[in-house]
Length: 203
Image (cartoon, rainbow, N blue to C red; front, side, top):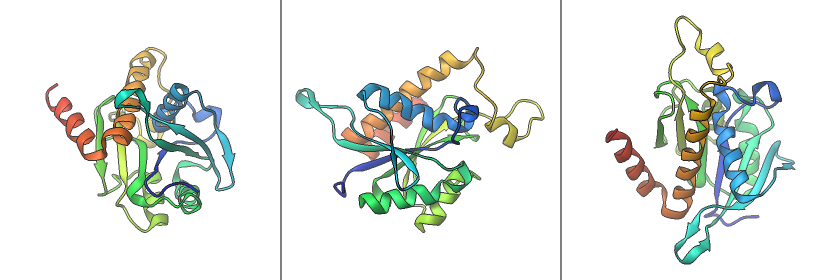
């Protein structure tokens, strides 16, 4: 079991190599950056997830940051809630210490925003989590993917792979998103949200 103050950070996406580098999986791609930074590796969990126990960030004096559980569901996006809910129950973590990283069609590509509670914006992964938890009062890191080009359907766009031409810029976005997660667990959600949104408004 973990401390009730431990953050559970869940990156949303679909399992399988065919989905790994799609717009819908930017949450999991961000988690891969966090995992790489810590040198940890994924392990299978009976909740239907893959998890990694890590320390994120650096505290004053060079002390390693707090313990965090990274997780990604083994199920498809629209059934994310079951595995996440089971893992939270197993770990003894409540919604107040859940951070979900997900793609967002309503934000310009590469823009990062933090949000606690509120609607799911039509996102099936968030809908599933809210339904299973019985609350929307958890934290989200929204990664903008922009709207589909031309007449492409949103459902097709989110499952389209990130282009090779754009991938370097996306890699920077994933690093920036990982920085935001580290700030949340070391500095707190509200101060990180204020700093992030102030930086965005100044662009």
